[in-house]
Image (cartoon, rainbow, N blue to C red; front, side, top):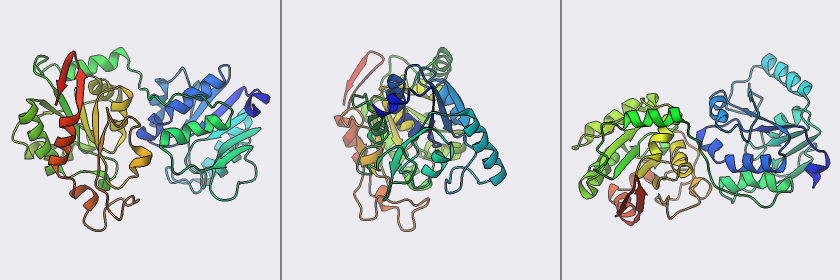
Length: 356
């Protein structure tokens, strides 16, 4: 194996992205650790990811905050700061850098600037000079497999695509406190996550409200609403449209607390956003409502336990922040369609089996 031939002591993995992106990279981190059990593995990512990576100490030894680089949109470009960062990282002396930040069009120059003895990554078009091991970007594969493909380039063809989200006692205590008002004998517990990082991926609030009322009436479900502090107003709008009062937990959970809460649910219904992948990682049955994103890339691999609902339209997938026309990819998905999917989903949590 090429990677083993250089016996890397220090490995850097670059992926400066968000929650769902990192959850879908965990199988690849697991594969890299299995391949290099004695190496020090550094993860280079966005500031928020530092606490997230503490959950994966068994795969990652060290975290470095990404400070930006020309062409990479996630962080503003400040030339002096970037120059200092690159010099520090080159001096640290990585033996292997794995570029796990997309197709490589904008991220390969950063990975190569770190000056490792070996740099591995995908590329578009002609292979960039300097990549030691590379392959054309597999844009026809699910994201989990795209990331795992980098481990395969390093010589490790056998891998596990299972997602993970380790929970600690503090997470479980937080969730238990938030759920204390719910009756444990009155199941199912169903949560709706109505937000998303971009407006174009948000199913209409009134649709969510109709869905919530239907779930409560049809399945005698207790309904919870989840969301970040920034999504509280959106979640409040859903609650106001409902006729059956929900347990509104928007802005009341930490990331770990949210994951622990999702792990206690019977089913989780969400837009295409990070918490949908948490449901997969903690093995809670879920339904994800897809709009403009490429479902072939981002949907869960297990479509039986984690089905999706989507409407095929001629303009999807797209990369818009706001829909410039009529948001047809989500407007055309009526609440009744999500109910139909829920009726076919058998979910089991808390010792209660609900065949619906």
